[in-house]
Length: 489
Ligand SMILES: NCC(=O)N[C@@H](Cc1c[nH]cn1)C(=O)O
Ligand SMILES: [Zn+2]
Ligand SMILES: [Zn+2]
Image 1 (tube, rainbow, N blue to C red):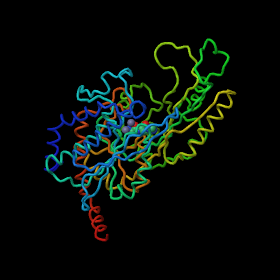
Image 2: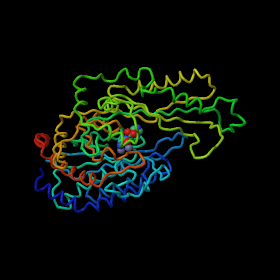
Image 3: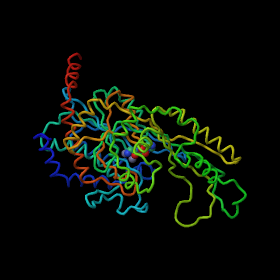
Image 4: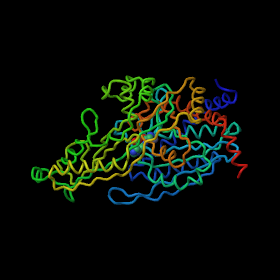
């Protein structure tokens, strides 16, 4: 149950919910798509808008330049700056660093959205819009939580730090270098890292996340010449790049979802009896999860198999083909250059560099058997490591308590099938505690045409973060440890 202080904060949050939603609407209106080069300025504008909001909160904000990156056509494009901000610097208080991203996946009304993706629209308690749950809503919920303390003239019981990026959906370009560089400076006094960039496993039951899969993204280019050709004048007498590419892509997974690249499963962590029991104990409604996807049948029928194939086994997905004719209608062309995009979600203890090598070698072998004179080029634009944390860490204890207070129930302890590149970077580079605390529900349709966050989850999420500040401040040991360090220094 909640304390008087918590009730005061909750009441403030409830009373101001429409203002919090209005800000989310302003953020969703910015088309901060980090994938399409033409929208890069909007991502930068979104980062600046976020910086303004943090300054209004009283935070000190640094905008760190990340340089530029090379596009597949050789052009170089400026990366949006990264935000490092801090609010409070009391050596007696623990320091919590929050990570979030304000870039979004691409979205167009024509993709099949019922509402305009960049106009946050409330229908039956759900707020639809690109970025509503991934990740603008959760970032704002954290800011709203801090703002509520300040508006009530209450002391925030923890020091807050923020790292907010604008390139997450494109693979967190430039991020790792900064974390390494700032480890001894900006991150040196951070005690806890909190990431809120994933979803619950259920539509209603809150969750706490202690692991995520990594990802290796591949680009497979097949080219026959400089320009597209008329399929009447050349069809039948040349080796077509698209035919080669489709054969390559078709060689990657079998109909049971098994990856066909030799060696890919070799290093995957073996399943212990103890781990097996974890899956049995989880509450997971297969029908609900299926409904959320809109798909009639999954590759697996049992809860245990489904969860293991999302969390602890690798998967391979084919995302698209650049250069392929994809518009409605007919265009009788032979594309001269096509680039297939696929990725492998990596799990502990797979090795990225071995994985890359195995995949490239396999594609070259398959291609060589086709006796095609076309040029094959395989590259790895981005990769990220999987992450698993220790759930006995005090940070998880604080979060469990906060969840119980706000939602009246214990969280499901889960891992995530998606990738948050920064999770493993934080853990590996800083050696501090890292936790993912989702506020969105399983039916939020991240990356899809019906992305939403419910009003309930957005507002309760704001309360959850405010409660987490209070719970972290109550953790034993930390204060003492900190004041000891201060005295000895
Ligand atoms: N909400 C997190 C998310 O969607 N992350 C992306 C990150 C990524 C991985 N490879 C390229 N981008 C994801 O697809 O998991
Ligand atoms: Zn995200
Ligand atoms: Zn995402």
